[in-house]
Image (cartoon, rainbow, N blue to C red; front, side, top):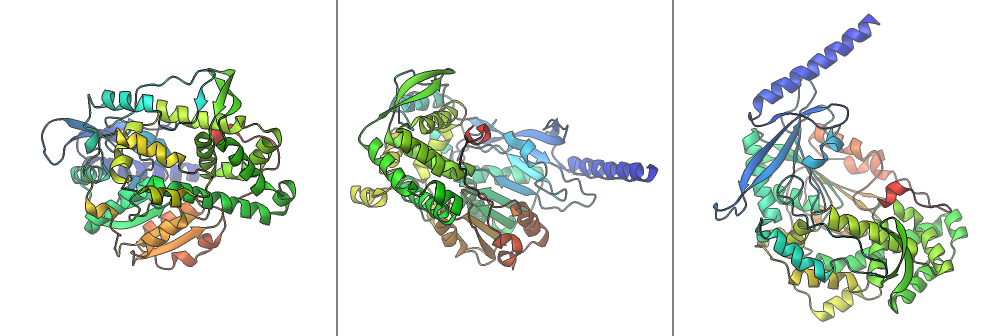
Length: 486
């Protein structure tokens, strides 16, 4: 017993020594802070940057920074820099989720990029939920866009919240913290920021872990959303047909889904949803339905889609999809920085598109052109920043990189990852079967740590984890758990 206690004490002492030593190397403004319910101590601080980096005058904005120190007695000098998705997720604001990311060997540096978290958050004013009788169909309601823009413009130049400026902020912050080479890790939109960091700072990028890749050559992303989502749901249908229990329970899921799309395409359908905690009647349209289905395709809810489709078809009731749309929409407009999202997307992802290209891109898809038109209208009234030509150029690099995609990703399909991987001579390409947006099997974390320790991606695509399909079991009864809906 004594020996166990002694060893445990020595382990704590080593960890404290490593943390103390690392803290001494950080700027004095990085002060101790507790980041989770377990009492994990990190270093937190604020670094100010010019909002308009080109002019270097006018407003300065605070950037929230959290450093989770390595606990190893001999820590590696190169930290991990997670780039989160959205665009709109703030890394520092989710510090408790990253405690184990470094495996004890490396610091984890979390930054709320400008416009996110505690860094001049560009969240729109609180929007009350719809009233009974409302039409649930619009992702970006026109009557909300202008008030949101005008309110945020009183404290932010919305043209300055771009990927390029975020990367420039980060490089400045890393210099302030005293770091040299770093390991970048990006998911979804975070792969764009990671790729831009690799492009602009190759000399200080040691490794890159990229999951759910945004392809740099996609100039009008909302135009491709309909086809990507259609490809993903076709993959789910194929998986159901190959699974005996699913095929037996839902033998006509394709035709049932087509019938639902046809029905709602003729006009909004009546549904019952919870508004202010009470059942309320509303109308539900095709854009809302398509957006709900697309959202379910992102993760584990895809396993419930055949059942949910079958129920809606047999009962002629779209209420579950309407309720899910309402949860997603309410969250976006009340908690998410929609202003930051639009500043990035309207500047970087809404390139020119002819009417003919819109028709061809959205034909024979369950989303149709509705979602694209929503983005088109929102961006028509939103300030756009400067778009560097390099942002949409293919990335060519020999930085060791692990490039991961899922076969049923509804927003960044595997084809995007293929195109990015083609320019990474030091990269390894992994496509996880059965996986959705940026998520593979649990051994994905092992791959991340292996890349960090080896500093090379050579041979990683041939390992056991890379060949292991993600877990996927279709639901045949019951209701989706609340955690998948919230």
